[in-house]
Structure formats: C-alpha cells, structure tokens
Image (tube, rainbow, N blue to C red):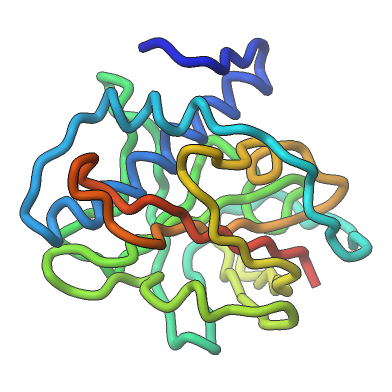
Length: 214
C-alpha cells in the first residue's frame, strides 16, 4: 500500500489505522446495499491521503472517566439505539466493520480510547446495508446541543453533547481533526454521506459528528 501521507510513531500508526477503518466502513455499507463489488486497497489509499485542516473548537472539557468498554449507544433525536461491537483489524490488515447483514448494528473502534476516557473515542455505523437503512441513516440530522449516551461495561453512562456536524469529502478527510489528541473526553460518530460514486462503488462523503463529554 502506498499513500501520500505516511504517519510515523505510535500516534501516526493509530491515525493511519483509524483512517483505514473509516474508509472501509464508508464503502461496504453501500456495497451490499447496491449488490456491487469493490477493492479494499483502493479504499485504504483513498482515506490515508486525506488532508488535515484546523481542528473544530470544542466546548470546555470536563474530567475524564476511567476506562470501561462501551456496551450500547443511544441517540434519542434520530431514534438510534444499538449495542456496540468492538472493531479492530483482520489478520490480513483489512478493517473489521459491523456486519452489513445487520446494518442496524454499530461498533466502536477498540484501538482508541473508550467513550468517557480522555481523547476521541470513535463509534461507526452503516448508513445502509443489505437493502435496508442503517443505524446511522439519519446521523446527518444531528445538530449542536443534541445529546448521545453511551452505556459502559462498568455500569456507568457517558453523556456527550454535539458541538459540530460536518459532511466532508473522502478525498480530503480531516484525519487529524477526527483522530488526533484532544484535551478532554470526546466522541466521534461516523458514517457515509453525500452522493454515490458508481465508478468507485462508494459514497463520496462522510458524515462526522463531534461531541464532548457533558
């Protein structure tokens, strides 16, 4: 795999791997929805060349919670509720994603912080799949002030507040904004968006929701 962006070190590895997760999820939801095939290598290259821009301003941070794996996510405004499955990498370095046969299943990126810990936790979900709407089909409807609750394995709940919603091109995905270090506990919700590129067999954009711990 070759890219124009070659992160180095521990943080660089996390950023690159996270970009791979995002790109693969952004395509495969529609691939089965439309009954088409795609190329994993092309997907990885597309995300890794994303350009970083200035980080969006987040509200004042609050104290971080202890590490605890997330179990469920609840987004009242859009009627989205799902258990959470951990997502990592397959043995061949392709990205694990929630099963497209179950498009209402969301997952959390287990190589990053758990929701409530310092740093940006990441939850991903399909916009559609298997000819049905996905768990994050209405994600773009969120707006600043909306709340998202993540239940955790230790019995606690982390409530996050939306402070920004972006629709960004996959060709210029803001990797640093999404996966870079943050001063306090934050959350990112990510799915596909925009128009569908039939030649690339994927959506052209991603919907990215930025949240901070309440």
